[in-house]
Image (cartoon, rainbow, N blue to C red; front, side, top):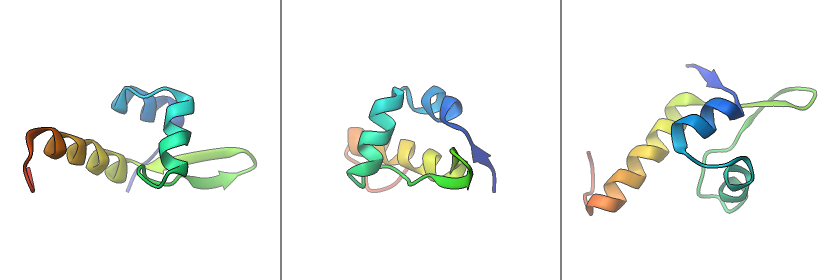
Length: 64
């Protein structure tokens, strides 16, 4: 398992900082993991699965 910081999440998804937190709050994006202090990260595989789900949604497929 690999944890990635916000900058990498933004690079992978193409989303901006505020959008990442907005969709996370709405429950449609993986939750962050507290690392201590104000530092947070995301599980890379969960972010990748979120991206794949968007592709499946776009293509109208149940699975890729």
